[in-house]
Amino acid sequence: MEKKENRRKRISKKLLHKYRLVVLNDDTFEERFSFKLNRLNVFVFSAIFALFLIGITTLIIAFTPLREYIPGYSSTALKQKATTLTYTTDSLRQVVALNEQYIASIRRVLTGDVSTVEFNRDSILEAAKLDISQVDLTPSKADSLLRSQVEREDKYNIFENDNTKNFVLFPPVNGTITQDYEPGIKHYAVDVVAAKDAPIKAVANGTVVFAGWTQDTGYVILLDHGNNLLSVYKHNSSLNKEQGDLVTSGEVIAIIGSTGDLSTGPHLHFELWSEGYPLNPTQFIDFD
Image: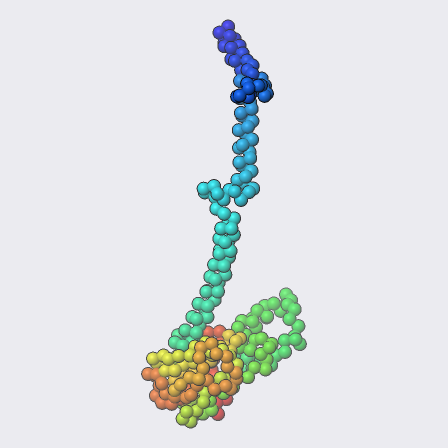
């Protein structure tokens, strides 16, 4: 016990033993200033100074742009660019997905690889005459089931918007129908024979989404009329429009012909599509 007490006293004496720190002028040895120190003061001061430096460094790293110069930390501008690119990439993915769906729909139109759907001609024409502003569209519990059923029936209604209630399809060409719309044999069109070099006209205002040559159907032009309505004109001898052109109803877009391996003579192979499904053109257009 005495040894421990003696050791503590020696340690305490060393820690509390006072020293004088004197600063002198090197030339004149004049004393500038001096102060007393002991080992304990030096230790405490060093610890406080170290904690102060650690705190200041932490604040600089956490709240100032200087942290960008420390290896392992990314810059704020880089993070903002990465965030912006992430949102942009997500938006582009959605646009690409929509475009792929649209292109797939057009591809099905061109190849005829699609199942048929029976359309009610009367319901479509009645919907075309409907004035939405005169109808109470407030749903109720009693008629919710009926509204759901009607909605399913009108799913493929090409005149579903009130701004198309006066929508009229212009005959692309006047002539004799030599082959009717026959979905059973995948003939989703009507073949119309007309005079030689007869002009083929757009059935409605729209945009040319395809104008080119295919081996089976020759010169083909495809118009997008909006409201999920497409019209297709095949076996033409020449095309008057290019992809991306805007056309108006009745405007000449091609010349009747007999191009392509599947053509047996000069005629127009005309197709009408709504939401990727074929329609019988004779239910909407008078070719006589």
